Image (tube, rainbow, N blue to C red):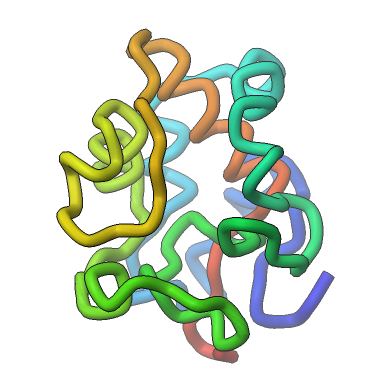
Length: 146
């Protein structure tokens, strides 16, 4: 795994190191994910809806940008991906609150001008579970090395 991300150690193991890696604005994103109470195993199944457009385990862009280190990452910063101006200029950080809102809503309703066309997840537990999976599989963003 590239140094700018906390390797996907699993959420429990990440608790030991995440607060020390200089995540964006020193927010403990792992604690946010833990407090959400999602089930990563169930989230893996939900993430199948995302796999056609996003890669979570490696830094490879598809129709959408890769999601390695997505938790805590500022939106629109993957250098080799063609984001919409709306996303690049959004100022969003993909924390639990933002991801919950984004995943629960039609993307074009959440952010006018985005290229992403996603209908949203209807079940609250699906949102919690997929965020837990994204944290466990994709890791936590490390702003200190990007």
